[in-house]
Image (cartoon, rainbow over all chains, first blue to last red; front, top):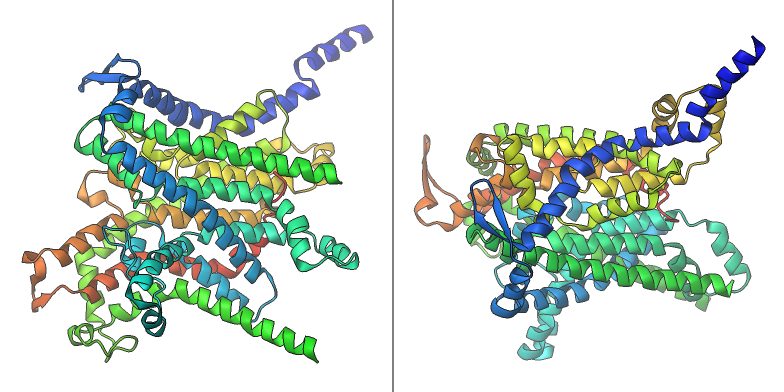
Amino acid sequence: MKKNSETETRKRKKFLTMKRRRGLEALMFLSPWIIGTCAFFINAIVSSIRLSFSEIVQLKGFVMEWVGIENYEYIFVYDINFMPTFLSVVVDTLINTPLTLVFSLIIAMLINRPVFGRGFFRTCFFIPVLLGSGYVMAQLLQIDATGSVGVGIALPPLLQNMLGHTLSAAVQPFLDRITLILWKSGVQIILFLAGLQSISSTLYEAAKCDGATQWEMFWKITLPMISPIILLNFVYTLVTYFTSSDNKLVEYVLKQVFTNTQFARGAAMGWVYFGFVFLLCGVVFGVLKLVSADAEKEK
Amino acid sequence: MTTKLKRIVIRIFYYLVLCSLSFVFLYPFITMIVTSFMSDADLINITVKWIPEGLRWSNYKIAIQQLSYKRYLLNSLFISTVGTIGHVLSCSFVGYGFARYQFRLKGLAFAIVILSMLVPIQTIIFPLYMQYSKMGWLDTYLPLLVPTFLGYGLNGAFFIFLFRQFFLGLPKEMEEAARIDGCGALRTFFKIMLPISKSSILVATVLSFVWHWNDYFEPNVYITSLAKQVLPSRLPGLYALLNTEEAMDLVMEEGGFTFNNAMLMAGTFLVILPVLIVYAFLQKKFMEGVERSGLTGM
């Protein structure tokens, strides 16, 4: 009798050990996401990649034929519009993304201190997020077809006279770019603020006792502590530039897909652009890892 | 004395920078509100920049009519509310799983989360469209809403990441105590973890609501019938009204009027007004939530 119950408990243990139970619970918590991944993500990714290597023979029923790298060859060799658009967007991204990060970090640090009217300033910097990135923002900034901004930072008339027409015309695009960047950094500011808030103040106090200057504290404490957020913000910024409605390349890709019905070429272009974004993220991730490894070595 | 003077100068400079920066943000916004109240005469008069001759509410009346405001407001409210609920529920649930459990292929699973954050919707919109058309989901709100309950949808991965970070920062003792007292995993999550993650829920709610509200790309692709459109999708029609010369003179029951920039701005303001109201109510709590979300140490 006693032996019997012992084997029984052992049996039960075999089926539901602590480890197994934890595993099942993990599965339960992840189950919505797993279903979502199978239903809405993997499938779409795989068929989009397959589509980029194929040609649609028959639109009805979506019949594809494998053609290898023909689509990629087409966009790189034959399509005269793709490469210039792609390169200009790449250059834009390479300039705008670091600037966005720098500006949003500066603003977050400015409003992280105890200031009079802190709530007001915070709401100000969050306004662009509320207005979204689509039609409303385009209308408010009066972005025209050339991409210049109607109501951005303008040079004061006095300064314009001093600089002369040519020089002020050269400075204005730069100011336009800054306006746009500031307007697109709402979420980044919020995320940086969250990161700055979670740095323990004892670190700064200890550094102060050791005679560190503000400048040193920024490089040795603030920056390493928020490096995960820098990565998150970097990814977020890249993706929002990627998907924003005033991105020329996205416009071009969508035109290929929905107007010219070149689905396969559109997919190939999308993946080329994704490759670029992925590469950039990889580089930044690697650099940040090196930096943090260096910091640990110094310790 | 000099250090004190230096401090004051720095302080003044600091406020100057803050004020000028916030002006850059506020300027277009204020311009919109001011312009929306202008009459025809004010619009032409270049001396009127900030203070119009009087508040012309009729601009709003016309904008409401042109947008068919009420109907589309309800559409947008429905999508944003349900989508937000979906995101908060599913992403907190999944984020908790990622934060607290160790299992095989966890690295791979999390890499897929990051990947889904990176792959923009424009790249995979066409296969998704084909899939939804096979499922018969086109021209319904299902393609917009169902994925949000499964950790996908608009920036779903971002919210999973947010909740994971938050739960990682919480001490494990409470859950262990609950486990020892015989509390199951589900009950631990819903009765203990969810109530103490109010701050993150609030951040996710505000962001998800605002993003859903302003999104027009996916709705424009999936929804074809006019009656089911969302509010922001109505704006291009309004802009087109301004640009086409034939449509300039619309005849209303009360008589003819010219559709002008003021009415356009009134319409634009009306589109974002619900978001502003939601934010105004949650503003203070939202900022506190941001500060407590503990977004460091990935």
